[in-house]
Length: 320
Image 1: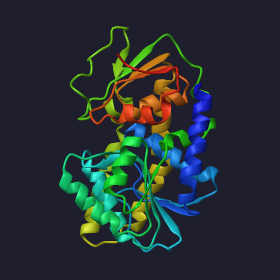
Image 2: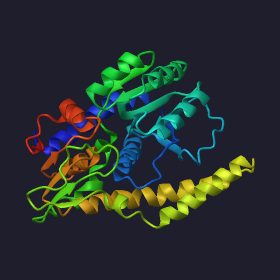
Image 3: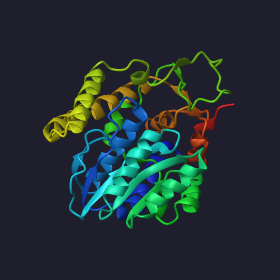
Image 4: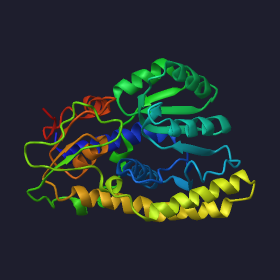
């Protein structure tokens, strides 16, 4: 199957499996206000899905700016997907637990996630919190994560859905396609998900780097960090911070998502071939119709995703 048909197929599958779960009025309380292009691609896919399917996105915030105000019971809380369900990146799971505990009367839908736990006691503790919510829907983005959630979180509704990046509107991507040069890229992550067996370089002369927004953190994010600090101090002092947080949210929604989405696409667009240790570099290469090889991360989420959805793509291969 070619890339264009695969993208349409996964988009249709996501709409069919995910669409019936989401109400007409939606909030996103945990958007990624940071510089990981992969999570920004998920956020963009969520926004485009809601727009395409006629949902009303009432508000977007993140773990610091979310106000925990009363919500009408017909509002769906849409939690961001990714690879942070479990204990590998625990801060995100803790935010998720808090939201689920505070809103038992609202439908909550978690966008497709990869799951990873090392501490079995946390599996039981998290599952107990989740089970107390009567209308919580957990979407896994690969079959391994789906089976894990069915086994340990089966008191909630569990379904299998492709990554939300495949819901990015095609019109956003077309201008980045067809700009290939002779250059090759080895996008190599440098965090705790990198495996010891990952090569330091490739023999084909590939450029070696991570997402450019991670290698050189944009300076305006320092201002965001200061704004988050002010927001936390206001909260600790019991000083209303609603308008201040709304300003942060507005800037993130109008600028950060678009800027980092464009940065990722512009970065990848000149390369004729991509080898990557990051799942969303692989996904973005597919969205831009580029040949791609993948090297698994420490949790095996790249191969799990490929085995679930992408085995029929001739231009996608495991690196050997």
